[in-house]
Image 1 (tube, rainbow, N blue to C red):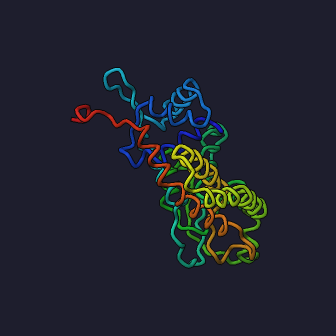
Image 2: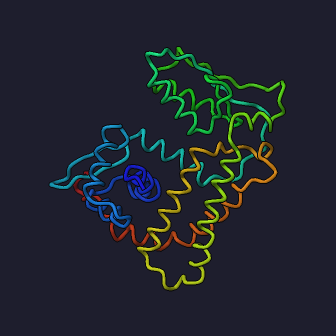
Image 3: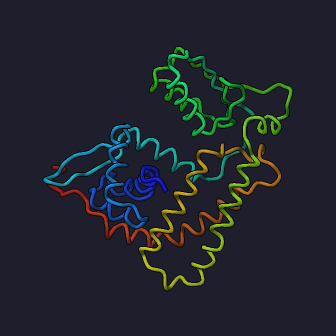
Length: 275
């Protein structure tokens, strides 16, 4: 369990709902529940500061950390997909991004690919990525952020041939591997969910916090592999739906105790510091 990745989960699941700012001492206590040392937490915070995900400020002799605008935007995107509502019917259109980025800007090219993958795009060819979801505005924001407007073109397109839509999906995404990952999630958390139901009265708030955070942390990884395809493009057997129901049911059971534990550990900035 990487400290930096866990920090994203803690901020996304808890801190963002409490003013987006937290004292490093509270963070250390929360992360300590997962066996992470203060040194490991501070090292992860330092990396996230350098990468532009976090911002810091001092209040007296205490350090407080909040997500930057870039970080908040990433958390909002993740929350939108994790806690998504039922999607509307697909209109048959594809969002397409095509780029030609010079070799001297290889780092930017690699970063763009990572961002497109996170948004749910699949690689049709080396420099052409597609998604059945309307993500044109997101891609525009990406290209502006990385100043790649001269190297990227964005389309809304119809597919006229030759593969049918499901076959096209199979070319761009490894649905077998994604399905297998969902099966592993179900196999891991279904027994835990059933055990919690049988022993709910004896579960401590600290256990709820640890288990709920692990649950979200694990489920959040599907953002990087599941393209969130419309119903019409899914295979006949798709375990994402079953995993989603399990996630929501177990999450709702763990949530009250997890929040109580977080609130015990969380110390908000002094009121006068915000005056």
